[in-house]
Image 1 (cartoon, rainbow, N blue to C red):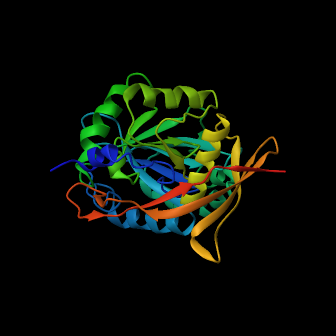
Image 2: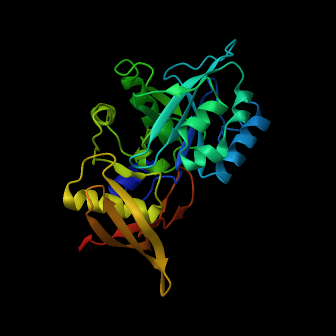
Length: 308
Protein backbone atom coordinates (compact mmCIF):
# COMPACT_ATOMS: atom_id res chain seq x y z
CA UNK A 1 0.00 0.00 0.00
CA UNK A 2 1.35 3.41 -0.98
CA UNK A 3 1.46 5.91 1.89
CA UNK A 4 -1.05 8.74 1.58
CA UNK A 5 1.72 11.34 1.92
CA UNK A 6 3.69 9.74 -0.90
CA UNK A 7 0.65 9.80 -3.19
CA UNK A 8 -0.07 13.44 -2.35
CA UNK A 9 3.53 14.40 -3.04
CA UNK A 10 3.61 12.52 -6.35
CA UNK A 11 0.41 14.26 -7.44
CA UNK A 12 1.89 17.63 -6.39
CA UNK A 13 -1.24 18.40 -4.39
CA UNK A 14 -1.36 22.12 -3.48
CA UNK A 15 -0.67 22.96 0.16
CA UNK A 16 -2.14 26.47 0.37
CA UNK A 17 -5.61 26.56 1.87
CA UNK A 18 -5.31 23.29 3.83
CA UNK A 19 -4.60 24.53 7.38
CA UNK A 20 -7.15 24.00 10.17
CA UNK A 21 -9.16 27.11 11.02
CA UNK A 22 -8.70 28.54 14.53
CA UNK A 23 -8.08 32.05 15.80
CA UNK A 24 -6.58 30.74 19.05
CA UNK A 25 -4.90 27.59 20.37
CA UNK A 26 -4.78 25.88 23.76
CA UNK A 27 -1.81 23.52 24.11
CA UNK A 28 -1.68 21.01 26.96
CA UNK A 29 1.19 18.70 27.83
CA UNK A 30 -0.09 15.12 27.97
CA UNK A 31 2.61 12.44 27.94
CA UNK A 32 1.91 8.77 27.46
CA UNK A 33 -0.08 7.08 24.66
CA UNK A 34 -2.63 8.87 22.51
CA UNK A 35 -5.63 7.33 20.79
CA UNK A 36 -7.07 8.42 17.49
CA UNK A 37 -9.17 11.08 19.26
CA UNK A 38 -6.52 12.06 21.77
CA UNK A 39 -8.59 14.50 23.83
CA UNK A 40 -10.80 11.63 24.95
CA UNK A 41 -8.50 8.69 24.21
CA UNK A 42 -5.37 9.34 26.24
CA UNK A 43 -4.48 9.47 29.94
CA UNK A 44 -6.14 12.88 30.09
CA UNK A 45 -9.50 12.73 31.87
CA UNK A 46 -11.89 12.12 28.93
CA UNK A 47 -14.62 14.24 30.50
CA UNK A 48 -12.21 17.16 30.77
CA UNK A 49 -10.92 16.52 27.26
CA UNK A 50 -14.43 16.58 25.83
CA UNK A 51 -15.26 19.77 27.76
CA UNK A 52 -12.15 21.51 26.44
CA UNK A 53 -12.97 20.44 22.89
CA UNK A 54 -16.56 21.69 23.19
CA UNK A 55 -15.55 25.05 24.65
CA UNK A 56 -12.81 25.52 22.06
CA UNK A 57 -15.19 24.78 19.18
CA UNK A 58 -17.69 27.31 20.53
CA UNK A 59 -15.05 30.06 20.62
CA UNK A 60 -13.11 29.45 17.39
CA UNK A 61 -10.18 27.83 19.17
CA UNK A 62 -8.29 24.55 18.84
CA UNK A 63 -6.94 22.30 21.58
CA UNK A 64 -3.72 20.35 21.01
CA UNK A 65 -2.14 17.80 23.32
CA UNK A 66 1.65 17.69 23.23
CA UNK A 67 4.48 15.57 24.60
CA UNK A 68 8.25 15.86 24.60
CA UNK A 69 9.84 14.17 21.56
CA UNK A 70 11.17 10.69 22.22
CA UNK A 71 9.95 8.11 24.70
CA UNK A 72 6.67 8.91 26.41
CA UNK A 73 6.62 7.87 30.08
CA UNK A 74 3.73 9.34 32.01
CA UNK A 75 3.91 7.69 35.41
CA UNK A 76 3.99 10.07 38.36
CA UNK A 77 3.76 13.34 36.42
CA UNK A 78 1.30 15.85 37.86
CA UNK A 79 2.44 19.36 36.86
CA UNK A 80 1.89 20.02 33.16
CA UNK A 81 3.05 22.67 30.73
CA UNK A 82 0.25 24.64 29.08
CA UNK A 83 0.24 27.39 26.47
CA UNK A 84 -2.47 29.67 25.13
CA UNK A 85 -1.96 31.49 21.83
CA UNK A 86 -3.89 34.13 19.90
CA UNK A 87 -3.08 34.22 16.19
CA UNK A 88 -4.44 37.51 14.85
CA UNK A 89 -2.02 39.39 12.55
CA UNK A 90 -0.35 42.24 14.39
CA UNK A 91 -1.89 41.13 17.69
CA UNK A 92 -0.63 37.58 18.13
CA UNK A 93 0.63 36.49 21.54
CA UNK A 94 1.71 33.41 23.46
CA UNK A 95 1.23 32.72 27.16
CA UNK A 96 2.83 29.75 28.88
CA UNK A 97 3.07 28.21 32.33
CA UNK A 98 2.40 25.13 34.44
CA UNK A 99 -0.73 23.84 36.10
CA UNK A 100 -0.72 21.37 38.98
CA UNK A 101 -4.12 20.11 37.87
CA UNK A 102 -5.20 20.21 34.22
CA UNK A 103 -8.76 20.78 35.46
CA UNK A 104 -7.58 24.34 36.30
CA UNK A 105 -8.03 25.07 32.58
CA UNK A 106 -11.75 25.16 33.32
CA UNK A 107 -11.17 28.72 34.58
CA UNK A 108 -9.91 29.91 31.20
CA UNK A 109 -11.67 33.07 30.00
CA UNK A 110 -12.88 31.71 26.68
CA UNK A 111 -14.69 34.89 25.66
CA UNK A 112 -11.55 36.91 26.32
CA UNK A 113 -9.49 34.46 24.30
CA UNK A 114 -11.94 34.71 21.41
CA UNK A 115 -11.43 38.49 21.38
CA UNK A 116 -7.66 38.15 21.69
CA UNK A 117 -7.67 39.83 25.12
CA UNK A 118 -4.39 38.65 26.60
CA UNK A 119 -4.80 40.36 29.97
CA UNK A 120 -8.22 38.87 30.59
CA UNK A 121 -6.81 35.41 29.83
CA UNK A 122 -3.91 36.05 32.23
CA UNK A 123 -6.27 37.11 34.99
CA UNK A 124 -8.33 33.96 34.52
CA UNK A 125 -5.20 31.74 34.66
CA UNK A 126 -2.52 33.59 36.68
CA UNK A 127 0.00 30.77 36.13
CA UNK A 128 0.36 31.94 32.53
CA UNK A 129 3.02 34.47 31.53
CA UNK A 130 4.06 36.02 28.20
CA UNK A 131 6.58 34.05 26.16
CA UNK A 132 8.60 35.57 23.33
CA UNK A 133 10.02 32.37 21.84
CA UNK A 134 7.92 30.65 19.14
CA UNK A 135 6.56 27.16 19.69
CA UNK A 136 6.69 24.46 17.00
CA UNK A 137 4.21 21.58 17.19
CA UNK A 138 4.94 18.56 14.97
CA UNK A 139 2.12 16.07 14.36
CA UNK A 140 3.19 12.54 15.36
CA UNK A 141 -0.06 10.73 16.20
CA UNK A 142 0.27 7.37 14.48
CA UNK A 143 -3.16 6.30 15.75
CA UNK A 144 -4.68 8.83 13.35
CA UNK A 145 -2.29 8.12 10.49
CA UNK A 146 0.93 6.16 10.22
CA UNK A 147 2.49 8.89 8.03
CA UNK A 148 2.33 11.29 10.98
CA UNK A 149 4.29 8.83 13.13
CA UNK A 150 6.71 7.66 10.44
CA UNK A 151 7.66 11.15 9.30
CA UNK A 152 6.69 13.42 12.19
CA UNK A 153 8.53 11.65 15.00
CA UNK A 154 11.96 11.70 13.31
CA UNK A 155 11.44 15.38 12.46
CA UNK A 156 10.54 16.34 16.04
CA UNK A 157 13.41 14.25 17.39
CA UNK A 158 15.92 15.95 15.10
CA UNK A 159 14.94 19.39 16.46
CA UNK A 160 14.51 18.83 20.19
CA UNK A 161 18.17 19.47 21.03
CA UNK A 162 18.40 22.45 18.71
CA UNK A 163 15.45 24.28 20.27
CA UNK A 164 15.17 23.00 23.85
CA UNK A 165 11.63 23.16 25.14
CA UNK A 166 10.26 24.81 21.99
CA UNK A 167 9.58 21.79 19.75
CA UNK A 168 6.90 19.29 20.80
CA UNK A 169 5.07 16.32 19.37
CA UNK A 170 1.35 17.01 18.94
CA UNK A 171 -1.81 15.02 18.39
CA UNK A 172 -3.47 16.25 15.21
CA UNK A 173 -3.04 19.11 12.73
CA UNK A 174 -5.15 17.77 9.87
CA UNK A 175 -3.79 16.94 6.44
CA UNK A 176 -2.15 13.57 7.17
CA UNK A 177 -1.23 13.33 3.50
CA UNK A 178 1.07 16.34 3.87
CA UNK A 179 3.18 14.68 6.60
CA UNK A 180 5.34 15.70 8.24
CA UNK A 181 3.18 18.66 9.27
CA UNK A 182 3.77 21.34 11.89
CA UNK A 183 2.13 24.39 13.45
CA UNK A 184 4.06 27.47 14.51
CA UNK A 185 2.64 29.45 17.42
CA UNK A 186 1.66 32.12 18.28
CA UNK A 187 1.08 33.06 14.63
CA UNK A 188 -0.86 29.92 13.76
CA UNK A 189 1.03 29.24 10.54
CA UNK A 190 0.82 25.64 9.32
CA UNK A 191 3.32 23.73 7.18
CA UNK A 192 3.57 20.42 5.38
CA UNK A 193 6.18 18.16 3.73
CA UNK A 194 8.81 19.54 6.07
CA UNK A 195 12.47 18.58 6.04
CA UNK A 196 14.55 19.11 9.21
CA UNK A 197 16.42 22.20 8.01
CA UNK A 198 13.22 23.77 6.69
CA UNK A 199 11.52 23.14 10.04
CA UNK A 200 14.46 24.67 11.90
CA UNK A 201 14.22 27.70 9.63
CA UNK A 202 10.59 28.19 10.66
CA UNK A 203 11.64 28.71 14.27
CA UNK A 204 14.70 30.80 13.46
CA UNK A 205 12.85 33.10 11.07
CA UNK A 206 9.85 33.43 13.39
CA UNK A 207 12.20 34.81 16.03
CA UNK A 208 12.89 37.62 13.53
CA UNK A 209 9.25 38.06 12.55
CA UNK A 210 9.85 36.56 9.11
CA UNK A 211 7.62 34.27 7.11
CA UNK A 212 8.87 31.10 5.39
CA UNK A 213 7.16 30.29 2.08
CA UNK A 214 8.26 26.70 1.44
CA UNK A 215 5.68 24.16 2.59
CA UNK A 216 3.19 26.84 3.68
CA UNK A 217 -0.36 25.54 4.19
CA UNK A 218 -1.87 28.75 5.54
CA UNK A 219 -2.54 30.74 8.67
CA UNK A 220 -5.20 29.22 10.91
CA UNK A 221 -6.63 32.70 11.59
CA UNK A 222 -8.20 32.72 8.13
CA UNK A 223 -10.79 30.60 6.34
CA UNK A 224 -9.50 28.05 3.82
CA UNK A 225 -10.22 30.49 0.97
CA UNK A 226 -8.54 33.28 2.93
CA UNK A 227 -5.49 31.09 3.51
CA UNK A 228 -5.16 30.43 -0.22
CA UNK A 229 -5.56 34.13 -1.04
CA UNK A 230 -3.00 35.28 1.54
CA UNK A 231 -0.51 32.68 0.30
CA UNK A 232 -1.06 33.84 -3.30
CA UNK A 233 -0.33 37.48 -2.39
CA UNK A 234 2.81 36.46 -0.50
CA UNK A 235 4.05 34.52 -3.50
CA UNK A 236 3.15 37.15 -6.10
CA UNK A 237 4.50 40.18 -4.23
CA UNK A 238 7.25 38.62 -2.11
CA UNK A 239 5.79 39.57 1.27
CA UNK A 240 7.89 37.96 4.01
CA UNK A 241 6.83 39.63 7.26
CA UNK A 242 4.83 37.26 9.44
CA UNK A 243 2.28 39.92 10.33
CA UNK A 244 2.34 41.95 7.12
CA UNK A 245 -0.95 40.65 5.70
CA UNK A 246 -4.52 40.38 6.96
CA UNK A 247 -7.90 39.53 5.43
CA UNK A 248 -10.38 42.41 5.17
CA UNK A 249 -13.24 40.60 3.41
CA UNK A 250 -13.84 36.97 2.63
CA UNK A 251 -16.97 35.25 1.36
CA UNK A 252 -18.49 33.24 -1.48
CA UNK A 253 -20.23 35.08 -4.29
CA UNK A 254 -24.00 34.65 -4.30
CA UNK A 255 -24.04 33.70 -7.97
CA UNK A 256 -21.12 31.25 -7.67
CA UNK A 257 -21.04 29.42 -4.31
CA UNK A 258 -17.76 27.73 -5.25
CA UNK A 259 -16.06 31.11 -5.89
CA UNK A 260 -14.75 33.35 -3.09
CA UNK A 261 -13.77 37.01 -3.42
CA UNK A 262 -11.11 37.74 -0.81
CA UNK A 263 -9.62 41.15 -0.02
CA UNK A 264 -6.07 40.94 1.34
CA UNK A 265 -4.57 44.03 2.98
CA UNK A 266 -0.95 44.90 3.77
CA UNK A 267 -0.19 46.87 6.90
CA UNK A 268 1.37 49.56 4.65
CA UNK A 269 -2.06 50.16 3.09
CA UNK A 270 -1.80 48.14 -0.11
CA UNK A 271 -4.82 46.00 -1.01
CA UNK A 272 -5.47 43.14 -3.41
CA UNK A 273 -8.56 41.22 -4.33
CA UNK A 274 -8.12 37.54 -5.01
CA UNK A 275 -10.66 35.17 -6.50
CA UNK A 276 -10.44 31.70 -4.97
CA UNK A 277 -12.16 28.72 -6.56
CA UNK A 278 -13.08 25.53 -4.70
CA UNK A 279 -12.37 22.57 -6.96
CA UNK A 280 -12.35 18.79 -6.34
CA UNK A 281 -8.96 17.42 -7.33
CA UNK A 282 -8.37 14.69 -9.89
CA UNK A 283 -7.57 11.88 -9.67
CA UNK A 284 -9.12 10.58 -6.47
CA UNK A 285 -6.60 9.82 -3.72
CA UNK A 286 -6.76 8.72 -0.05
CA UNK A 287 -6.73 11.57 2.46
CA UNK A 288 -5.38 9.16 5.07
CA UNK A 289 -3.55 5.85 4.92
CA UNK A 290 -5.96 2.95 4.47
CA UNK A 291 -8.91 5.22 3.66
CA UNK A 292 -10.95 5.09 0.47
CA UNK A 293 -9.85 7.33 -2.38
CA UNK A 294 -11.74 10.64 -2.62
CA UNK A 295 -11.48 13.90 -4.57
CA UNK A 296 -10.33 16.39 -1.90
CA UNK A 297 -11.51 19.96 -2.23
CA UNK A 298 -8.73 22.40 -3.10
CA UNK A 299 -8.89 26.19 -2.81
CA UNK A 300 -7.14 27.54 -5.89
CA UNK A 301 -6.33 31.25 -5.98
CA UNK A 302 -6.30 33.34 -9.15
CA UNK A 303 -3.46 35.87 -9.53
CA UNK A 304 -3.98 38.77 -7.07
CA UNK A 305 -5.21 42.07 -8.49
CA UNK A 306 -3.95 45.19 -6.74
CA UNK A 307 -6.59 47.76 -5.89
CA UNK A 308 -6.31 51.49 -6.04
